[in-house]
Length: 424
Image 1 (spheres, one colour):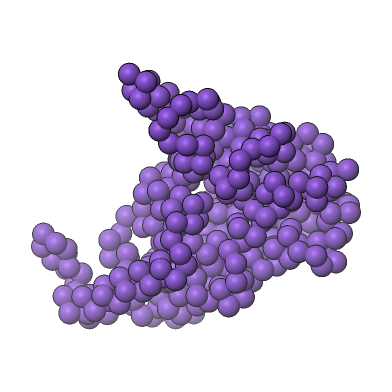
Image 2: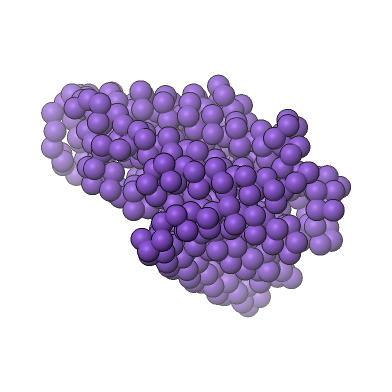
């Protein structure tokens, strides 16, 4: 009876987490819609919202909810790995922090910040799961429930259930040793490409069609993967240098966080002005346009989105990097498709999204599975895995340690004195 009651509570809390994720998505979409209408009415005045919004949210975050800063995934990783101790240990994943995360992220999207809601959703759902299941006896422990909540956040944010499971195993729990899962992907890709070369687009209960030869997606995947991985690794290296480093920029951000956020907002506003407003928000509309074959501005969009997303993330304000990374990757893939007919437009965009995301977060399985579930194109499964594998390797040349785990160091309990000093 106790086990059934416990399971029923967990199921109920999971439903609440899904509802919260869906509600957050609607609020975020509405905020971006309102910003779009404001920009149409008064473009130059709307640009001023970026520096003002960055500075205001940076101040609000430090004053009322310091644990809501940034993506939210590093906080979940740190909370899952360590027991709670006092306020500092407990507030990393709670309903209160999640509520601040939703409000502050939505305010930033209203201002046009190049952030996503996916990372914040992970923290929000993990906070709901952990807070409302505290005190339950038996069964899965605290760490498992936090990881489950984080995985549910990914699944709900992207509408990709399988990706949520993979993310929990690969990124949050780090259950796969790096060499192990790299070897697994490598062997799968080699066997897959060999089978494809011999049998064509083969399905278990019949042949889907296609000649027994390698198509352009298989051949272009390594090159797009290499490019996306290097650029993704560069993004992560630069971000880690500001948020978790000891250089001049990192010291400036810690000494004057609100002023630093204001400068980042000015950079984001400048990039938005140069791009004609393409860098506002998460980048959903621009990514969809690129997927539909409007490839002319792919390269310039990728450059602008890279800078705008880096400015937002480096400021330390609440907001994720998943969606902006997918948008930047779409621009990279579109650039390849635009320069040569060899790169099929839609396929190159999808491969670019996978490659850049895998390069930024260094979770190749998660990146590949997210795009698999999004595109639902079985013919791209092998090329997506190949691109993600190459991207992970290339990113590691620039950024040896995954960005989320570098940033999680700032949220571990042994970092309390350092972070507490930042708030003073």
